[in-house]
Image (cartoon, rainbow, N blue to C red; front, top):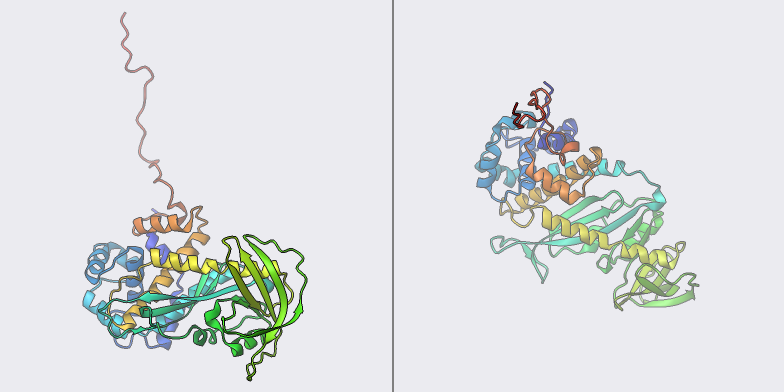
Length: 387
């Protein structure tokens, strides 16, 4: 009889074990926990995400209740004290590089020209409760911040960093590896003239919003060929320069596009792209809303509101495990060509983690056993006949 692995085991196949072990060896991930390896740790935290388990006791009980599946997962029984110690000591870089490995797989599945590459950059806060008294505050929330570069075409988020809540967005933005031909879209929190110049010198472009105190001088008006966009109207398209009296001069050309949205708000956009039309520039910034939808999906469907530890290392590990689960779900849905929205697919995976069936058939009812003989039916067998 052909062996069929569980849904959970099929999801984990996307993680190349040799590459994962190389990451573990590079960061000495198993230096302190010989009996509870990095792979055991990763499997446990991914299971906690997919099964919606929010406590160590619940995770230990539910995972060990399915011990017949541990062998094919390459894992063993789970002890909550061991997991707690590993959450405190295991290097975060092990999980961070594992996510980068999976994000690379998602990116390779979506081939496109470099001129069409779009990268959305933003951050979202992760509030922490009063038990996390070590967490820093930015004046609005106490907690941490998740910085993401998002490719909407591949539906592929790439985590830049997990920082304290009071870290400036522009400080993290400067660590991005700039891709030639890509377009980076971000809000006014990423205002840094040196970084903007580096983007332009790398052969890439950016679209952002200027800060309210940024002085801009008009250089030349540009004609508006088609003012009407999808949900907005272009009011102005002009070439500008910084009007500062200091040394904050940009050695690149800047373009200002003012658009009016359907709700009546007027926003000003700033870009170094002198080739696209004003409507295309407005549409690029409108597409930035997709990263807000990503953050909403992450916070609603991944378990990053309640944590399995109350220290900084445990929180970072759980966030990276959540993003690894996010990538595994999308890789599996694409490879199996599941004809379901990702939200419905995620719900089915949660209910069928240890069922032995193909991911491609996760939405189908179980087949009828052909080896079981069907009952013979005699026509008119209930009809009484009198002679």
